[in-house]
Amino acid sequence: DGGITQSPKYLFRKEGQNVTLSCEQNLNHDAMYWYRQDPGQGLRLIYYSQIVNDFQKGDIAEGYSVSREKKESFPLTVTSAQKNPTAFYLCASSREPLAGTETQYFGPGTRLLVL
Amino acid sequence: DQQVKQNSPSLSVQEGRISILNCDYTNSMFDYFLWYKKYPAEGPTFLISISSIKDKNEDGRFTVFLNKSAKHLSLHIVPSQPGDSAVYFCAASVYGTASKLTFGTGTRLQVTL
Image (cartoon, rainbow over all chains, first blue to last red; front, top):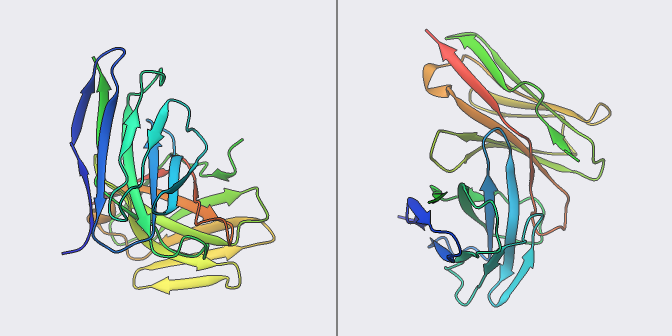
């Protein structure tokens, strides 16, 4: 059945280490997104991609990188430049990236903790 | 600069009563609004949406009202059930901006027996 999967559920990062969060969707959606949620805050957009091999920075892209080599996959790398990476990371996808009215569907999330 | 605000961090309602969750926005360009429900350690699930050409949209127990002049929307849940206990986020977008959503900070709803 269709949906969005994120792995791992929990991820631990050591100082100076890069880590990659996986996001896969089988909904045949064109657009994919990465958000970050911190306690007591709403979701903030990190990066988004409207089409394969193209992506744009969101509101808080510093310290993160992404790739979109396949339609169904949008991995997020949290680099050592991200000084406060501890958060809950959510991946989402939607069908029509330019419509402005298309609902985004979310994966179950990955919690990243710094050791 | 918080463009979408949910000023009540929490709300407690008795089972069977109406729950009213509020959301205010400052960007007059927003023309599409959504409500999401989120349980702890899970991704948000879509509940209901409304376009700026409407002032009301209903789906079962959930109704969203939009007051464009006041830049205010609300989600009504009638009757409230214990399973509705979750954090509710409102979100807004501008047509033609790649569906970029701006989220509020959320309201935690507790439905008591």
